[in-house]
Image (tube, rainbow, N blue to C red; front, side):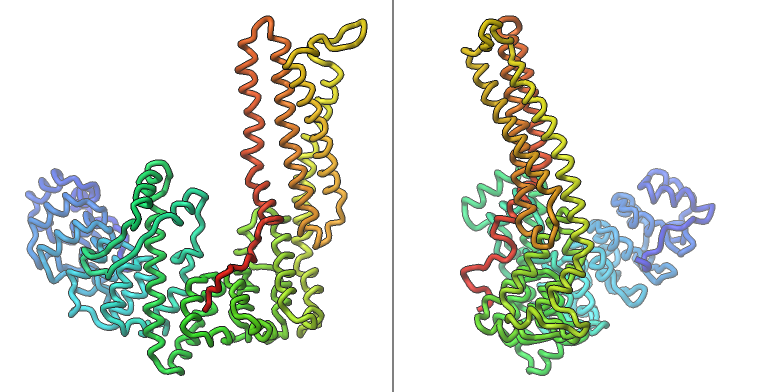
Length: 600
C-alpha cells in the first residue's frame, strides 16, 4: 500500500476543494471550480495529487463522474510523486464504476504503469477487489501485460483468494503453471500455503457444516466476463434446501462462497500438477524442492486435498523426504495433522518402511509424537486436560505403527520416546492437573450444597406430618410423590457427583490418567451434577404446588417455569465441554480410518 500515498495536507488555497472531494460535496466543489477553473487539474496535496485522486480514494462516485466531465483525457493521466495515476486510487477503492468513468474518458489509463512498474490491475488484485480485477483485466488488454505481469497477477490473485481469476489465467496461459515469480516460486508453492482455500482448512459450526455438505456446486469454464461461469445447486432438493436455510441461518452466503472457493482452489491444484507432470523428472523434482518444498508445506498445514492430488498421479512422492530426512507422514506427526497421518494406512505394508525413517537428529516417528505439539495446533483444543489427552492419544497411535524396537530407540541426545514425552509434557501435565482440580473443586462445591439442601428437605416435608404417627399430611397427593422421588434422585446424584469430583482431586495425575480415567470421571461428575440440579428444581416446584394448591395455585406455574432457568443455563454453559470430553474420550477420535483408500 506504500504506492498509494495517504491523503496529505493540501495547500491552503485548495482546502475547500480538498474537503469537498473528500466528502463528495459536488455543489461546493462546483462553486470553487467556477472561480478557479485551473483547479480541475491542479495538484492539491504535497504528493501532487489532484481532486480526482482524493474523490476516487474516498469512493465518491457521483463526484468523480461530475469532475471527469470537466477534465480533458490527458488530465486523467497526470501522475503523483509516486508515478501513480488517479486510476490507481480507483483500483484501490474497489468501486468499479469509478474506474469505468475514468477509462471511458481516457482508454489508455489501464496501460499506464505506476510505481515499481505496476499496473492499476495489479493494485486491484493486491487488495482483493474481484469485480475491479475482472474489469481492469478486460480494459488493460493482453498486449499490455508482459509475462512477468501475468506471473505477478497469478501469484497475487492466489494470495488474495481470487481463484476464479487465477484459474482463468492458468487455462488461458498454461505455461504460467510452471512459471516462477521473483522469489523463484510457482503457483503450486503459493497454494501450499493456503489451507483456508481448501475444505480441510474450513472450520464451520454445526449448521454451516450441514449446509456445506448439502450444497453441490460445479463449474464450467471460467471466462473473462464470467458470463459462462456456472455456480448452482444441481439437485432440486438441494436448491429447495438452500433457499430455506438461506433465510434462517446466518452467514449462509459465506458458506456458499467458501465452497465455491474450495472447488476453484482444488481445480487449480489439479491443473497445475497436470502441467508439471508433463515436464522431465529432474524438472519436477526441482519444482518440488526449490526454493521451498510445497509437498511438505501442505503436509505441515494439513491440506489433505492438495496431498492426495499430487500423490494419486505421482505415487513416488510418499518416499520423498525434506531437509531433515522426514517424510510427509513424519511431518504430519510433528505438526499433529491427523488427516495427513491417516493416509499412511492407505499404503499397506509400505508404511513399515516409511516409519523406519529417522531424521537428522536420529529421531524416529515416535520421537516426533513425543514432542510437544506446536502451539497453533494445541490451542485448537479447549482446556489443558483435553490437550494432554490428545497428546497422549497421538503418542499411543504412532506407537502402534512403529516397530517395537523403535519404542526404546535413543536419539542423538540419548532420549527414548517415553523419556522425551515425559520431559516435553511436564508443564502441560501440571496445567492439566490445575485445570482439572479447579473445575472439580468448583463443581464439588455446588454438588455439596445441593446434597445438603435436598437432604434437609427430606426431613422437613412440605405441609408437615401427622403428630400422632409421623406420616406426612400430603402423602396421598401426586405432587408429594413427585417431590419425594425427585428429592431422592437429587440426593443420590449430587452425592455421586461429589464422589466423582473428589476422586479427581485425589488422582495421581500420571500421563496415562488423562487418556480416559480423568475425563471419564469428569463426564460422570458433570452428568450427575446436571441431574441433581434438574431434580432439585423439580422437587422445589412440587413443594410449591403442594403448599399453594388451596390458596394461590396460579403462582406455582410461573415459578415452576422460572425454575427451568438455572437448569437451562447450566446445560448451555457446560454442554460444549461435556460434548468435547465425550467425543474426545469415547468418540471415533481423530485417527478414524476410512474404509475407502484415498491415495489410490
